[in-house]
Image (tube, rainbow, N blue to C red; front, side, top):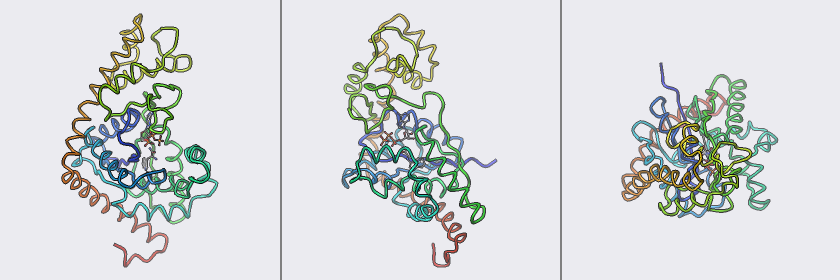
Length: 336
Ligand code: ATP
Ligand code: LTN
């Protein structure tokens, strides 16, 4: 049986990935590269839909790629590359954009949220068509599965709709992909505002656990995490979002059942739970941090790995693009 094709990507929009990215995305990616034909992309073309600085973007792109590798993505097993190195993404996005309804794109909740946050001035056409570029990413590789966090569900649905629409208009061309969304603790919440997902765009930095933060910073953030006044250690997402989040993180990082962790800390204070969590988080982050630094210390080698990834990615993406061009009546003789 052939292995399922997996595609996923993250934006290089911060100096470090955070615990939500790690739990909701990276750990799955690492597991899935064993079972699937995996393609992982640093989606820098998506990143320019938000405010950015060129030098910082370049640095963040390399740091993001280094963190993928440091967390266990093996560039020999998976294809690992930077989106802008493969022109087919933008080419297919244009075509899919002509098949996406204005209203359809306007219903994307991420667009609605971000455009409201950015304000009218900073809301661009690029932000509006963001999900179309994402669909192009996925469909170019004929991906079967797309491992993402559950905030991306709606974008995957749109991708499926566009694939089906194209197939029914122009003939069977695209694999209709499925989201692969982890059920357990798919969401990590902000330590200061535990009803909101942990996100790099959070209002305050104090609730965000970054992989590349120094150990003492991470410790301080965990020790200051918001809890509640009843002092009881149990899971109750409604009444006790803070404590439930800490327990959830503990469970997902250790691979131990929630009940087991609750039993371990039952009757003890929140301070103990937090101290335990500091150790668990540090045990996860420290080796990734060290390896990331090593990789960033040898830029030549990192660039070589990414160039090799881009070449492998382009070969596959171009094959799909050629087929698409053929289907929609573009002359293909001169195309690569
Ligand atoms: P933004 O705040 O700009 O939306 P983000 O911090 O949510 O960014 P993304 O770059 O959008 O991060 O997400 C990268 C991946 O990490 C996606 O698959 C996303 O679903 C996942 N992810 C992000 N935050 C969390 C979280 N708190 N819990 C679980 N998964 C998450
Ligand atoms: N929108 C996604 C990032 C992303 C992606 C993709 C994920 C861009 N293209 C293709 C999976 C497949 C996000 O914000 N997490």
